Length: 132
Image (cartoon, rainbow, N blue to C red; front, side, top):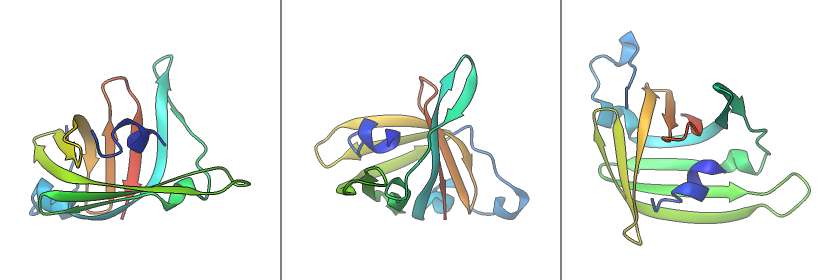
């Protein structure tokens, strides 16, 4: 899966709906998020990956300034591989900066952040969608 292969926690024009207008962006980000989709850009269009039931176990948990990633990868017929990443995070406008347990840094653009949906994109167009 792209998010964790890239940052495996080594490594926001944010949009709010009316229900989220009184909640800070950092407060909206906190909680446990489940992967819903991932993809990339080809010829200017978003293309979604087909996620397996194993991939769909992947979660991100944000608390105060810490995060935990529970990453799963595998196909339907093979073993489901699991790994965990930990680190810190900071949200500044539309940029989410993370530093993992090894000190590696990453910055991603948050395209949408509501109480139920979190969408981010890398500079090359790769993206991920998480839901609560």
